[in-house]
Image (cartoon, rainbow, N blue to C red):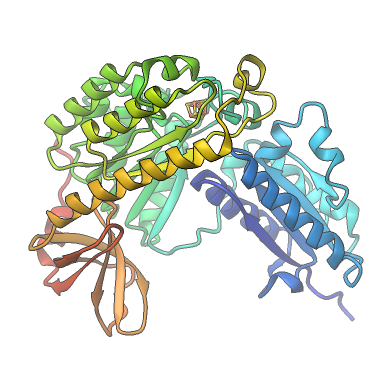
Length: 457
Ligand code: SF4
């Protein structure tokens, strides 16, 4: 009798890059002959794709591992693997030592070796040998039929003092433009209409194969040139990217924000509003420079929605310096911010150089104050959408309603009995809340027309 097919389950923690990596892990496991488990408890192989950006994220992974350790009493053949950011930053094996439940512990760049390691642990898993080369060349099992993440680079060498990424993911490594463009073209052929390009400081992108860009490409800046090429690919109707670094918002990258398929949104992390704090964070720009960049962005693309990331309670941040973050937030008039309370990450420069001296209760107070300003501003900004018609890429279907994101990445819902997922529709907004706009469907033909525009050559 043939052995039962082995099943897998992946837990994904953290950012969009990890979500994208999990699509590649799933593809590789299926190439190796495993099937996706209907539920976690059916899995023979559990992969934890970990995040290390904050202590809370690591604590969740440890908690999950303890549960899996207990589950082994009933499933003795269970294989548990930990990958993602935690293994990459574990230079002294101290983290590994705290994970006796894990059979495998490897940085994501070693993913091509996973089939061989699994075959060593379970003879019923076929030995397929290592997959050659760069893990980003593994064709992912995309989780959506019409939206996809496409990594442009991995790692980072900005060395912001609080950040683990350069240690967890290594120094910046850029994918060849030809690979990125081939992946996007292939996605478009299979019906994907929206791509989100991913990188840690994506606008530092340097094409290892600049010759892959068309002769007509108007840009010298490699990231702007890449956006221009992606905008030209037939079938793609929306282009998004995350996350940009303010220092690399060149005039050409700002110009490329107005390419016809770019969504009407930019995520540009500021992190703090005080120049002293920015300096200690090694962010390499001042508050004034940041504000000048967004002034240029809005001049090039009026009405663009802006998102940011902010850390409150960084080492040595005084109450007055935090007030500068609040005033910066108002001045920048952001649409959204992902706010975090600082937590020390071992191995970073901040852990070596500074003391985490803002008490937890004070961090929480600052976080609440910032959230309150954010909600006040976003509500005001969202109210300006009432009466306007926005383009929505539908990706949710509920009982009598559909929903999705506008080009400004505002969540929009509207009544619909039809399942419109995968379509771009027009919705006239009649009500605005902080995190939701609601409205009624109007005809979608105008949208089809705009999204079908081609890049001028
Ligand atoms: Fe980390 Fe972003 Fe700074 Fe790179 S640019 S070190 S990923 S915070």
